[in-house]
Length: 143
Image (cartoon, rainbow, N blue to C red; front, side, top):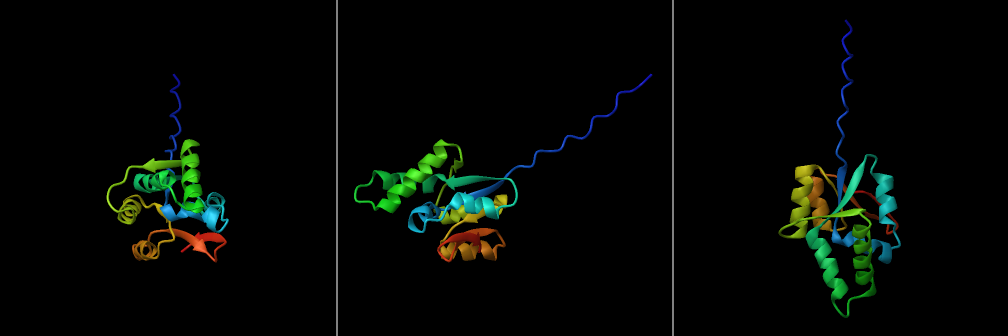
């Protein structure tokens, strides 16, 4: 009698690393002509997914509706809305100050944070978390 061979262990699907985008990242393509999506793709050498705090998305949506908002803010809001509609960025429910939420969420999930906020960058680096930021006004790099 032959016994069936044991099935090979199923490789567990590794969850993609979350890359959190701070509000200021959505302005870079219009202010400095930096393709943030290509730059993040170049830097992150593992499977990843992009996320944005719901409060950041709300802040940009508010700027879209507000009269007298600069063209850069309007373009950033349209850019985010397009990325969300295409399913390239996920809006993650957030509570409290965006910077505090980004820090807590990154620490709990070992996420990478993309930001140009100086104080947030320092805080994240002190906690030994990965930070991507604008360098020399023409590309992104790990801070």
